[in-house]
Amino acid sequence: MKIYKLLLAATLLAACSPTSEAQVLPKPQVAGGMPLMEVMKARKSQRDIAPDKAVSRQDLSNMLWAAWGITHDGKRTIATAMNRQELDFYVVTATEIGKYDAASNTLTTVASGDYRTLAAKQGFAATAPVNIVIVGDGNKTDKPEFMNYAAGAASQNIYLYCAQAGLKTVLRYGCDREGLAKVMKLNDKQVILYVQTVGQ
Image 1 (cartoon, one colour):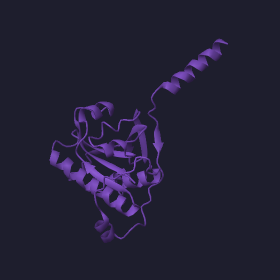
Image 2: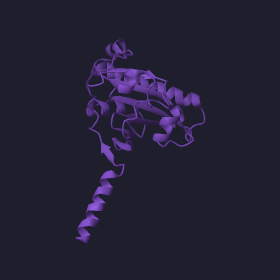
Image 3: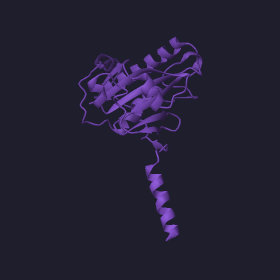
Image 4: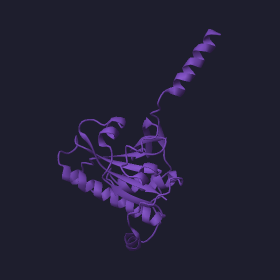
């Protein structure tokens, strides 16, 4: 009986503890889609995002790869100054915040719960299924212009992916930076640059 109680207590403790396990995303689909000139023409900002229509994990994997995936020799889908690769990407949903790792194609939970209101100062973004937080890493560069250039390039790739996939997106500056940084456990050298909202 004593062993049973100990096992039960351990099980309950594990169930209540926040998870930090990496969730493997579907393999990115890197072929097909609309022709480049057509997708650039279709690219636009949209805010009429339905709160009750989810973004599939396949679409999430594809757009994260488009923004920050690895293509060859450790290089990214976007150029970074002197290849410093000074960005990190966090995905905020109704259930958690996950950090993207392109090498393993995973999202690792850094906080469980709904923190979308921290990622949004606009109502539509607080109820959108996905907010992608683009973070600059000051440990890799001390030049904010490098971070902002890279963030803009990554954001454009998300725009282009969404345009050809039939998704809606908009890049935003407004969010609770202090609150998000605390929940996301950012260090003093990491800075939240922008948030990109995605949905249908």
